[in-house]
Image 1 (cartoon, rainbow, N blue to C red):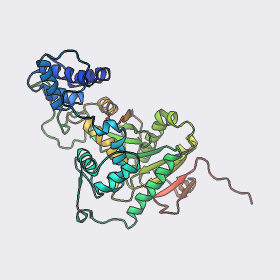
Image 2 (image 1 turned 180 degrees about the vertical axis):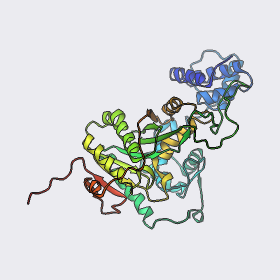
Image 3 (image 1 turned 90 degrees about the vertical axis):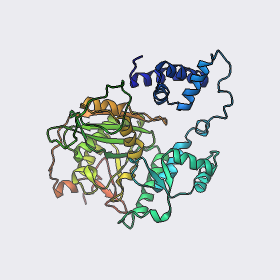
Image 4 (image 1 turned 30 degrees about the vertical axis):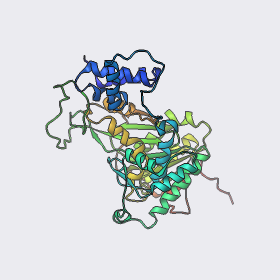
Length: 407
């Protein structure tokens, strides 16, 4: 039987919602038996079921399973806690995230918060959960508990933690008010058309893997994709503009513009403000004059007052977009050579999570020259009001310049 990994995944996506638990188990088991050796692993990957569940279904099929009113397998216990309490994993991740450490793009993340305190906070939010269960869920989410002595990460800005708390406070306030809050950043550049290897594996017919170059040396002749992402914190939705020119402030702001035109304006038709969280450096640096000038243009176009909060220097990987969007994009295209811009866009757009993440992507073929000079007069014309707390990191750009008195 010949069936691609995408085809098998598509089959279970289409059929899964029509089946109860027993039917899904039996269908998966029967298909695994049809594939033969290695079938259970392949079907488990495509269906989202555990390998043990697929194998159990196969045993039931082999034993001549017939029609039954029973849904769960004999001896099966109660449903998983995360199925009984929707939103539990997302709420736990939100509780841990402000105090998380390390690189969220890495398989390992860790937290200094105790399972007892996390369980208590979840119970206060209406969930039924114990500290032991919190520990198991954290492990499944690739968190691990570390001793306080392991938390030092080199030089830190003295107001780093206070800035995190400031961002967290403004974010919660904005979300309660129905104001869109987005997290933005540039994902690392990816080689395109070079048939370069992309870390990871995917299922292919035996003996017929995708062929890629033996060496991965940098090649200036190979074009590069520049993915700039916009993650809607409240809606769990993402937008990625895939550029083929330079990663400049104009490119970054245009990605936000395209998110608003394509997704944001429909979801927030009555919005008068927009909150943006961004890194301290790169194309959206708080020192980047062009970033502020372009944001002023966007504010005037959309009628939105734009509040920007930058993460402290050296903490870019703590930006929500890193582990709510980019980490899943990376997992989705692992093992697949990025042979064209269309491939990059399609793989990003196909990114999904069990929590319902939706991602749209577009190839931005615009030209974004580097070295654009912004004069003092142009910068002063930006209707920008710095906040009292670290105004260089936190500021609001109004949609219309304030009216000046004639006196």
